[in-house]
Structure formats: structure tokens, C-alpha cells
Length: 219
Image (cartoon, rainbow, N blue to C red; front, side, top):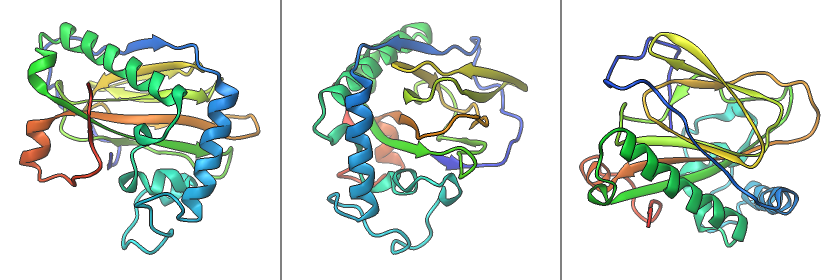
């Protein structure tokens, strides 16, 4: 996940942009409670690998108001022991396979790796502004899953046009990287909860000398 201003996105692909979607059947109350518990543990630095807020040098996304977002590099949500999160993982894999078919990419040849985190934000107390997630274009993908984000909108800047994605709880999306996006304002009380993820070929992580013991195979 990279912090950027809102600038025109280069035309890096020859196919129209597309969101690849999956609707799940998770118990969202159970999942929201689980993530809220993990959020409190992250705030107290009780999750393995997570350091206290403000102790790890420069931290990004502080303005999001979400500690689990600020600490996104220090854990992987898909390593939490939750059946609901495992279902999200399987949905992400399935949607990524569809994306590869659309972009004429051999899924198995990419040896995809995935990192994931979760965001808990509140109205008027912070949100994720315009940003992107890495090198643009397939086979580099990202996306998110709505645990408790309905009704709300996420703005995408796609080839010079703003596209609004309307969030539906229990739905995940996968998109090629390179299209900046931002949370729109919402007017309801309570936590807005999403799970986000990046999907990158192993070869890219090796070339980038990315941190180990964080990414896991998308098997």
C-alpha cells in the first residue's frame, strides 16, 4: 500500500478495468467481533510482531484513525485463526483466478503471494484518502472485503475518470493495481470494517527484496 496524491493514472493496460467480485456467506457479526478483539490487541501490541504505536519510526496512514491500518506491515490478517477470514482467503484466490483469465495470465505460473490487513474507521475520525498499492497493472492485484461498510462508497480513479464502487457487506473485490482509490465520507455511526489485501507474484517480491515472514502463498 502506497501513499500518493491524486494524479492521473498511466494507461498501462489494453483491456478495460474490471472489478472481480465474490459474494460470501460469512457470519459478519462473528467476524466483526473477532476483528474488534484483534484491533484491541494490536493497540496494546499484544499480537506477535506488532510494535506499540509510535515506536517503529515513521508510520503511514495515521490520519486513517485506524491502528490496524497503521500497523499493516507488522502482521498478516490471513494468519489469524478465523474460519470467516479463511473463507475470505478462498474467495480472494477464486477472484484472482478469474482476473488472470481476463488478462490472459497463467495463474499457476505467477506463484502469487498475498498480504492482508484490516481497517476499522469511524465517521469523522479518519479515513483512507487517495492512494495506490504498488506497481501498476496485472499481474499485480489488490482488493478488499466489506465486513461492515454498507452503505458507503469507495472512489476509484480509473484512466482519468472517477468510478464509484458501492460497498456491499459480505462482498469482496479484486482489481489490478495502479488505480488510485479513496474512502468516501459516510454518515452512519459505529465502526466501518474492511479487510484489504495485495496479491503479487513471488518473482516481484524477490526483486523488490520485500520483507519476509509476512507474505504467504495464495494456494
